[in-house]
Image (cartoon, rainbow, N blue to C red):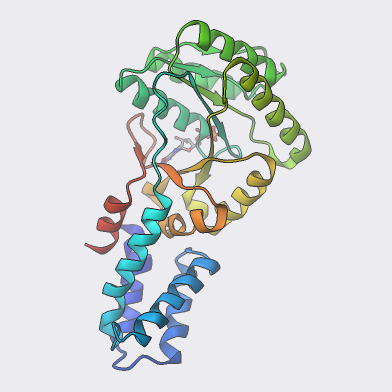
Length: 292
Ligand code: GDP
């Protein structure tokens, strides 16, 4: 609703007055798109599409712009919404990465509930050994969901946690192992080394692990989240994004630029602080909310 107001409704207001498409309209459109956090690249892409629409005469005046744009935005959303492959039958190892405060721990708690409700056996691994609070918080989520957790002392080697967790998950026939990781990007080289080691160790115990490395991004930070993601993408190979805090922001437009800018889709969206406030990202649902 909030993104619709900041993005689509502002575009409607801008284009409504134009009986003829001219440069001024493109400039106004560009300004609205940039302020709604869809990013420079996606703005250029959409403006290019509108120019094509004008050329092909599908857009004749300002009133045709939004219906035309709807088609383009739906395409972009579909590009971004790629669900996780079904890995039933394996112990799926999912690394959750991201800077502190974006909602990593909460997302793990929500995912634990989601998979448990699907009848899967879930285990958590407290791979952020840097902050004692992270492990404590994760333990609360494990208790709430009644799932096992593997954790070590504060300051312990995170790779050792992953080693124990993957060995235990395999032995116990766990379906989904969710691994928390440290989020201190300011010590980038250490974090890179640590994440690499964690991945290596996971792969030693379970074939193909980690199967997913999901980057958690806070939607309220808009395009800054995309810049942050690029930094993380340099550190670890990502397979997808979890976009949290979509409930409290008008900056949901960033969803359109994630695949184009980062090369990975949005797997999940967080829409609140509660255990049920996580959804697999659904392009059609998001498009309906934007355009209906
Ligand atoms: P971490 O440091 O990345 O592990 O972040 P936390 O999981 O501790 O979350 C930080 C804050 O964001 C907490 O107050 C969470 O309740 C809140 N949070 C997480 N996800 C969402 C979401 O989807 N919506 C809202 N409104 N708040 C969220």
